[in-house]
Amino acid sequence: MKTAAATIFLVLACSSAWAGQALWALDPKSSEVTFTFSSTLHDVKGSVAEYEGDLDVGQAFQSAAGQGIFSVSSMTTGNRMRDRKMMNMFEAQRFPKITYRFEEAPLPQSDQGQTELRGWLTIKDVTRAHPVSVGGFRENDGISFSGETDISMNDFNLKPPSVLG
Image 1 (cartoon, helix red, strand yellow):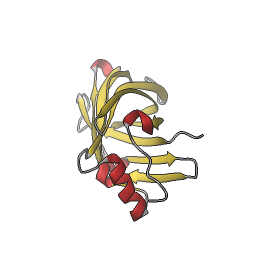
Image 2 (image 1 turned 30 degrees about the vertical axis):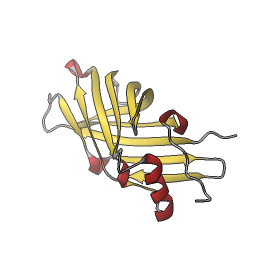
Image 3 (image 1 turned 30 degrees about the horizontal axis):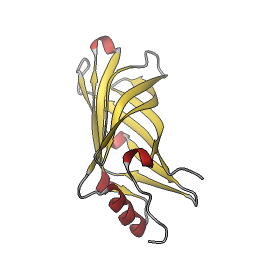
Image 4 (image 1 turned 120 degrees about the horizontal axis):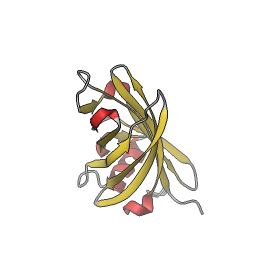
């Protein structure tokens, strides 16, 4: 039996107003957050329209800590009935945000590199340690990361919606 899971794909770009600034903000114009729910019958793809985040870059550009905050009500699959069920599953009225926080991740020191974010994911009222492997590279005025992670819905007390209603 296939376990209900979600895969999150992130393309995040952070930029600073001037060189040497320690706190960088996520740039929503250059970023996207998508997800896929896998189940026995089929996979469902969607996106998150509203999110924010920041990256606190450490000394000498060696490491960073940060967070991402994702609005549950802005998650969409393009199917209103399915989206309504998804909002109920996440209890969006009661728990409007999904958050991911990480500390002291090493930053790639070459044009392209891999790093692992060791952080805490909060969905509804459950917070769990959750590593995310990301690729990243530095650009003239910022940093770009992309990554993908699997999340067990059972770990966060999420009951997959029934196709029967």
